[in-house]
Length: 534
Image 1 (tube, rainbow, N blue to C red):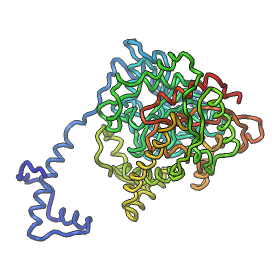
Image 2: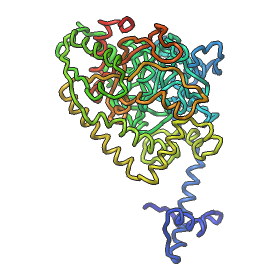
Image 3: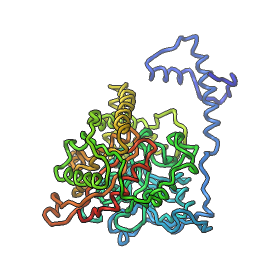
Image 4: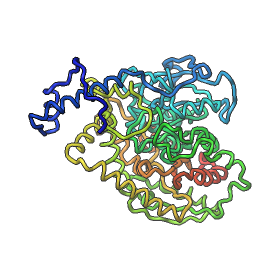
């Protein structure tokens, strides 16, 4: 213990009663003759902490002269037909230095900080938050020449896998209005698929990039844990936070990842990642392939437990099996592989995301290196009835689950964290034999929106089983690409039996830091087959 002085200012508010109150909370007591000593030690801590809190905050700097925030406005409903824009703006490099993304238009998920542009987080649980810095990934996009067109709708605090929870209203699937675009990166999925922007940033804590990518017919990558820094992005739970690219083409996905990847020496999640200058040249490597559709020598493992996951519809499974045959036809060796613990992966994720998410929301997490968005964190310091009433069902469930675990199962988070290593090790064992694993992304095509007046269980019913094959990889940390493979007719909701079709998606899972293997396999398939006609 470090104590640098035993002198206490006369105005110090810490009293013996303060110490007694703390002991009462802890359920312990101090000896009477020792209380004055502990009072002084606490008073010393109070003065040190008070002096620290009075200092200016230290935030990553933003070059607003080179990248000015222009035309910042709430979107006009007439110009937001899918409900996918949360906020509009225009930010680009006024010095025109060029870069890999020169002229590419981008939407940024609204849990990712853009300085001076309001962050809604899709919720009324917290209000009036305007970031004072840019996320690292935003800075890198702008430095590479991208043009940020605005913030895309984020589902309510990133707590829904469908697009019926945002406080600004439903986000519609571009293929079928009235149907979900997926969540929680719902706006990003809809805007890219609709052609409103070239690419978008999504964030993925349990499938939140891959669900909207899957339902909107996009390529969506959840990178290796930490490959893309999470600095200044709204967190759900630190061990499953990921940010990554959402694009219409595989090449654009690789190009965008190449720009945003690499450690930033701020976010501890990124410390194991290579420096930006050492990031693989994913895009150039794909473009330089002599015979990109030849998969000879590539080994693909079909993840049996994912194929047979209970909520996967037979027609979705058949579409995935047909797509897998394409790998064989391109020369790959394709075999079945069993990872039994995959079936428990969603349970491991739940036991971490609920207690861990609760601790994070209550600012009770500790031991992190990175940038804390203090103004945003402060909005969670107290919980009022108005906040609670404005919360989405999944948000309330996190609070209830997390507090229950804290009070009744205090070892749950640690146990699940240990088991997440087993999950990673088991996937690694399979990947020791195969270059990539393949699995269904989502068990069914996009369904119709839940009504905002629906009961909690009716809202949750729209996403039962939806992330059973996505969430496990958030806790294992492996890179996973969602890729479109086919279209299937709508069999639910107002467009049932209309003949309208919606996208089907497949996942490719790779070794840690081996996004290049995933891209190689997906690129070959994408060049050979047109998913929109399958």
